[in-house]
Figure 1 (cartoon, rainbow, N blue to C red):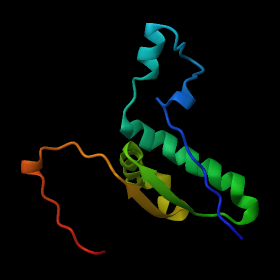
Figure 2 (cartoon, one colour):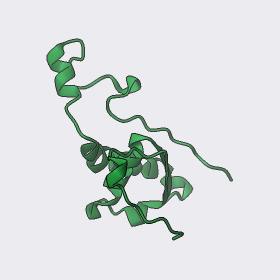
Figure 3 (cartoon, rainbow, N blue to C red):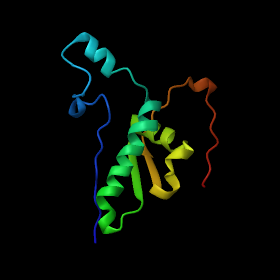
Figure 4 (cartoon, rainbow, N blue to C red):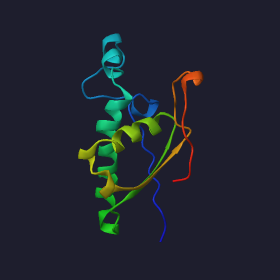
Length: 116
């Protein structure tokens, strides 16, 4: 018994530079292609990625996924986890966010730290 490792590549990365509707060799195509937010990726892409992994692994009794993220993917995963319609509790056993992005002025930042 072992583990599968799936590496997802979301919008805007070099390995995902094709699109069915946008021609990235034109200025208009690039503008349309890059017109998205992290919230949209979390709302649409992350849930689809998890559904695909579970569907591929269903014959091996994979019903839940451990999601490990880095950087902006942490933001996207937190958005996805906050949406009730994604049914994350039935799909994700845990989320590990490595180096999440944060955009704030440190003088105004306060976060209580405690063990959960």
